[in-house]
Structures are given as C-alpha cells and as structure tokens.
Image (tube, rainbow, N blue to C red):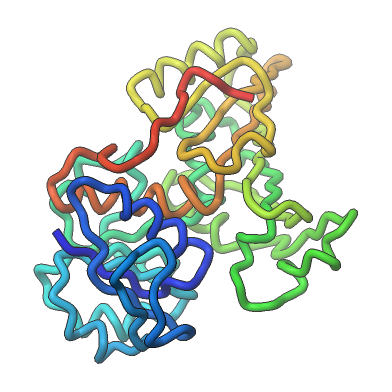
Length: 309
C-alpha cells in the first residue's frame, strides 16, 4: 500500500521517511514540502520532492496520507482527498473533532482500526495520558505536570524556543496556563490536568514529572504494581521502579514510566519519551497500521519494554 507524506522536510517527516523505508507492508510513494521541490528525497531513493499544495496532494494515488504540517493548515489538504483515503494528521487541527478518531493506540486501538481520519496526539499529551491513565478513579484533584522538552519540539521555523544559543545553560518556561496539550489531555481523560511546559538545550526527548493527590494512600510498591498491570500487554510502554532519564529516551520508540514515590495520598512519577518518535512518527506508524488493517507494530523497531532508565 502506498503512503503520501505532506511536510517531509521537518524533523518528524524525516523520522517517518526512515520508518517507512523499513516497513514490509507500506511504501512511501509521494512526498511534498515547501523546500527542495524537484530534489531527491534523503532516505527514499527514486522519490522526488513535490510542491506543497493541496492540488499536488489531490493527484496522489495513495492509500494513506500523513499530514506533518504546522497547526491550522491541514484542512485544505483534507478537503482534496477522497473519503476512502486514510489520513493521519499530526497537527492539533482535528484532536477535538468528534468526526476524527483520536490516535493513542494504548487507549483506543479498537476505534482506530479501520478508521479513515485519525488525529495523532501531541507529544507531551502522549506522555501525560499514559502517565495518568492508570490513576483515573484515584485522583483527588487536578494532577500537576512539570514538562521539559528538547528543542526539536519547537519545529524548524526559527524561534527563541529552538535557538541552541538562547537555550545554552538555560531552561525556558512558556505557555504557563492553557497550553494546547493541557487542554487536549484534560479533554481525553475527562479530568482537569495542570501542565507547565519548558524547553531545554538538548535536541530531542521529553521528561514529565507528574504529581497527584489521590483519594487514598498508596505506596511506591502498590503504584508500581498498578502500572505494571495496566501496561503488561503494551510493548511500547516500559514500567520500572527507577526514575527514567530523558537522555535515554532519545531514539527509542516507546514510553518509559517509573520513579514511583508516595507519601500518604501524595504520589509522584516520571515519564520519558522521544517527542519525534512515540510523540509523533512512531505513533503515526501505529495508527497507519491499525487504520489499514495491518498488525499495529509492523515496521516499528524493537523497544525494550523491560528496561526503564
């Protein structure tokens, strides 16, 4: 089956090209970008970069199209594609649209299977939901999440949040109230969440420290057991007692959850993931597989779900 990629020159686009190059059931057949039109595509021999226009994409004979575009641009491309084409949108444009399936496989793979319109979750939102989902029903109030991302999360368009010199020896808070992913996670979990994002001087990876007040006392051991049970059958979620470190998240295709601490009804845990992989490209591949009727993990490199750290 052939896949088209819109927005192929970004960080996530490059990761998707690499993943699709090794996929036994999917072929990257079309690519479009604002830059490099007419040039060959690194990692995809024989392909030529096409112009980033809805008219170009409308002419593709693709079974599926991945939109790796900034927010607010997806609509023009969606409207040109036939209803039978699977579309996976990596932007936030359709995450609150009930006509689209929300694509977090660990919480909704049955709905994603066979879907034709899938909204890929945000990178922070992926980690927060997987970190909080096992606590649903135990939360005594809005959990507090302190998040730090590498600067690749700010994309390729120059800004203070992806300027390595500005970030050198620095930690930059932003969007202190009402961040998009705070609203996304609160909406998906049906539970208010308070999130404070930061960007640091490393390139890729996310670390989330989640603090929650529970309705009853727990221990580190009981929390660890709860999470291990919740994710026992999830190959892309690793659960362990040690605190996962963001340096080890880079290049890994899953999520690590660990560092469980508890004092009475107060609980703290840590989640790490690669924002470009499970936070975007790897998750898009899971969603493509499910929507096209393929095994969910096909083409996803092995993730060691026994190791956290």
